[in-house]
Length: 100
Image (cartoon, rainbow, N blue to C red):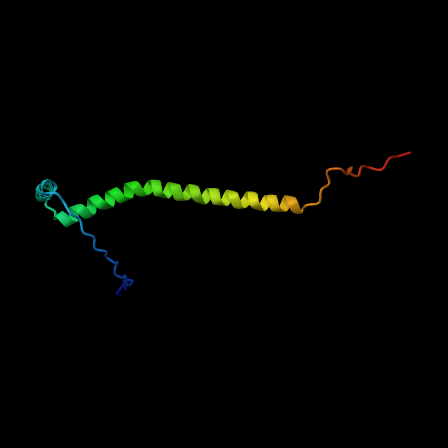
């Protein structure tokens, strides 16, 4: 019995260019040699960690904005419903019939 693996679509890749000072380039190469990784792999890992760390604040802001939008719609709907209801403020409520 053979298992078929689902087809995986290739991930799009985007190229970016960075410019480093000689000091940073030398230090980067020394660290990469020490760790046994390429500079590209090291930069991708560091970039991924930084993006993930900063993405937390972005997601919190988006969640807050979404919550505020939901509250705004709720209050707008309630306000519209209140303005459509008849005004019963000056009328007496019907009571029980009085006995003789």
